[in-house]
Image 1 (tube, rainbow, N blue to C red):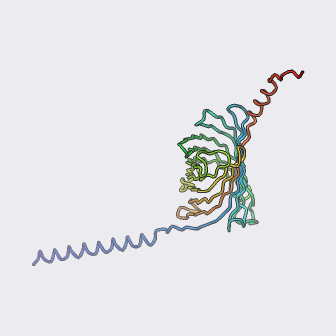
Image 2 (cartoon, one colour; image 1 turned 135 degrees about the vertical axis):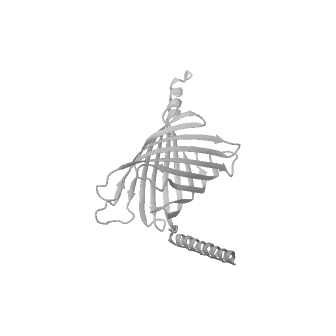
Length: 275
C-alpha cells in the first residue's frame, strides 16, 4: 500500500511537470515574433550600352530609371553604372568601374531629411558565356563596394560589400540562333549577399527572378520586356517584401574598332587606273 502511494505521487509529479512544459512552450510560441510580408509594385526602365573600342576592350554602361508605388506613382532611383570590359576570350569577360545611384526617400519632405541621397560604388565583374545548341547561358559574378548613407541630414557614408551571382539564358523562338530579326525567350535569377559592420540580420539581401521576351532588331539594337519578382528583407529581421516589377530594357551595341579597321582597308586598297 505504501509503495502504491509512492507510485501515485510520482505519476502526479510527472503529469504536473509535463503540463507546465506544454504551457511554457505555448507561451513561447505566442511570444515569438510573427513574420510579416508586404507586396509592392514598381516599373524599371533601363538602357544598356556596350561599345567596342579596341580588339579586346569595350566601354560598358547601364542607365536605369526606377519607379515605385502602383508601378509609377513615386520616383525610386536613378541608377548609373560605368565600366571598362576586357574580352579575355569568347567565353570570358572581365569588367570593372564605378556606380553612382541616387535614391529617393520613401516619404518626401520630412523634417531633417535629404529627399534624394547618392551612393558611391566600385564594382568588378566576371562573365562566363556557356553556349549550347540553341540556348545561350550567362553566369555573372559581380562584386561591389558600396558607400551608403541614411536619408537623415549630414548622416555619414558607411562602407559595405555586396556579392551577386546571376544565371541568365536566351532561347531563340523564330530562328535557330540569336541573329537579326529574332524573337527570343529570356530569363534570369540573381542572388544578392551583403556584408559589413552595419549588416546584422540581412546577409541575404535580395533574390530576383525575371522572365520575358526580347527581339533583336539588328546588330546594334535589342529590346527586352518582362516581369520581375523579388523577395527580400524589409524593415527588420521578421519583415519581408515581395516586389512585382515590369521591366523594359533597350540594348545598344557599337563596334568602333571594326569601323576603324574597315577604313584602314579602304585607304590601303589600290584602285585600278582609269584610262
